[in-house]
Each structure stands twice: as C-alpha cells, then as structure tokens.
Image (tube, helix red, strand yellow):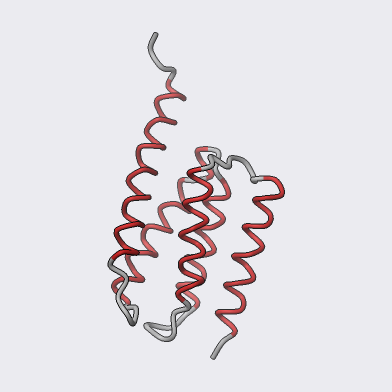
Length: 128
C-alpha cells in the first residue's frame, strides 16, 4: 500500500532532520577555539532552516529553539565572547526534540526546554 502524501512529507522531513543532525554533529566536531564568525554563521544558517520548517511539520519546539538561537546569534556583535554552553544548549534541544519526537508544544518538557533556552540567552546577552 502506498504512503499518503502526508506520510511522504513526514518521511522527507525526518530524512532532512537526519541530515541536519549530522551537520550539527560535524559542526560541533569542528568547533574552533575561539569561535569564528564563519563557524557561527554556519550554525545560524542551520538554526534558521530549523526555525522555518519545524512548526510546519508539527514540531514547533524546533522552531522555537531555532528562533532562540538565531536571536542570540544576531544579538551578539561579531566574534565577541560567544557563550559556547548557550550555543551547545540549543544544539542539544534540537537533538532531544528530534530524537524523542517531541511534537506540538512539548507539554511540560517543552516549557522547561524553552524556559531554559530563554534564561541562557538572556544571561549571555546581558554579559558585557
């Protein structure tokens, strides 16, 4: 029996997210010290894509995390004092949401993850 169009799209989404997870893993493995604007720009591009597509496939928490990371990156000037734990926390949320298939708003777990990211970003942006 052939898959429905919705099932085909869902399969394409998960295949795309498999690739995104690999990109994030590769990017983390190549994380320079100190971080460079090129590396951060690559992370921003990935986060921007996740932000745009997550909610469309029933994973708005991916979009929320993507928007948070994009906001953090755009809120910091250049290569100045990137807070690596904040960047990595976003990558971890992408992984957890995808691997655990946390759809919708994620319930209590989604609220905790979103709140944790917001607190991290607020604190990181408040640092001089």
